[in-house]
Image (cartoon, rainbow, N blue to C red; front, side, top):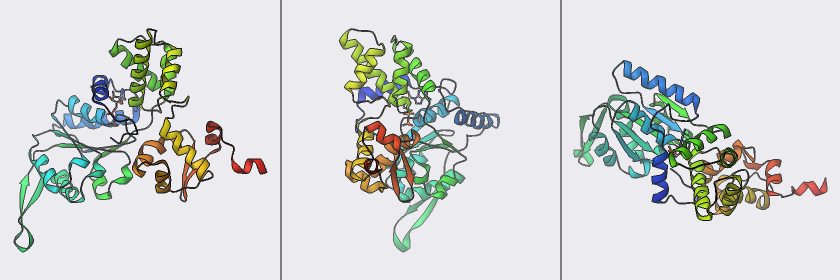
Length: 333
Ligand code: ADP
C-alpha cells in the first residue's frame, strides 16, 4: 500500500498481522461491502466453483489486504500475494499465473501499477483461465496457448479510476471501502486492546478512535504508541496518556498528521485557498502526487476541509478555522 511519511518497520508489520481479522464475522464495519462479499462467496460455494474476481478500492489501511486474506480463509483456499510494482513484464505475470493451483486466490495489491504488457495477458487469464505465451521475436514469433487452473483474482487499488476500463470491467464485483466512523474504530480498538491484553479505558479508546483518520491501520498504530507511552511512564492507558502520547507524535485533535497539515497549509498560505492543481500542490509539499491523491486528499475531503473542483483543490472555511489562518478577504470585508 501507499504509505505516508512514516515508513512501515518490520515490527509494525508484525503488529498489524497479529491484529488482522481472519473471518468476515470478525471484520468490523464496511457493512455493505461485507454483505456483498458474503453473498458472492456463498454463491460460489453452493455452485462448487471459484468465486468471481474481486476488486477492492479505497485509501490505504481500510482493510483491502485483510479482505483478500479472508476471501482465501473463508473458502479454505490457498492465497498467493503479489503487487503491481512486482509485475513489470508480461513474463512476471505468466510465471505467477502458470504456477497457481486450482481454486487459489491471487491477491495483487496496487494493481494499477502493473505493467501495461502484463495487463493484456491478465484480461484473457481472468476471462478464460488461459494465457498466450509469446515465443521468439519479430516475424518468427509464435504464441503458445497455456491453460491455467481456475483462480480468483483479488485486486486492490487506492482509486478504481486509475484502472483502465477493460481491466475494471473484468472484475465480477467491485467493493468501494469507506472510511470508518468513530464507533466502528472504537470496536476495532476494543478488539485490538483485547488481543494485546491491554487495559484501555473507554474514554481513552474513544479519543484514539476520533483521531484515527477513519482508518483501522492508523487506529492500531496509535494504540501501539499509547501502549508504549503507558509502559515507559509506568501509568495506565487512560485519557491523559492518549492525549500526551498523541501530542508527542504530532497527531492533532482531528487526527491530522504533519503531511495533512502541510497540504492544508500550502493551499491556504501559498495558494490563497486555491484552486490549486494536484501536481503543483505535490511539489510544494515535496510529496508524490499519487500520495497526495490517494492518502491525503480523500480524508480531507471527507471531513470537509477541502473540495475538488475542475480547476483544482479548494480549501473550505473549516480549513481556515482548523489551522487558525484568516482568509485574505476577511479583513477587507
Ligand atoms: P489495506 O490493504 O487496505 O492497506 P489492511 O488490510 O492491510 O489495509 O489493514 C490494515 C490493518 O488494519 C490490518 O492490520 C488490520 O488489523 C486492520 N484492519 C483493517 N480493516 C479492519 C477491520 N474492518 N476490522 C478490524 N481491523 C481492521
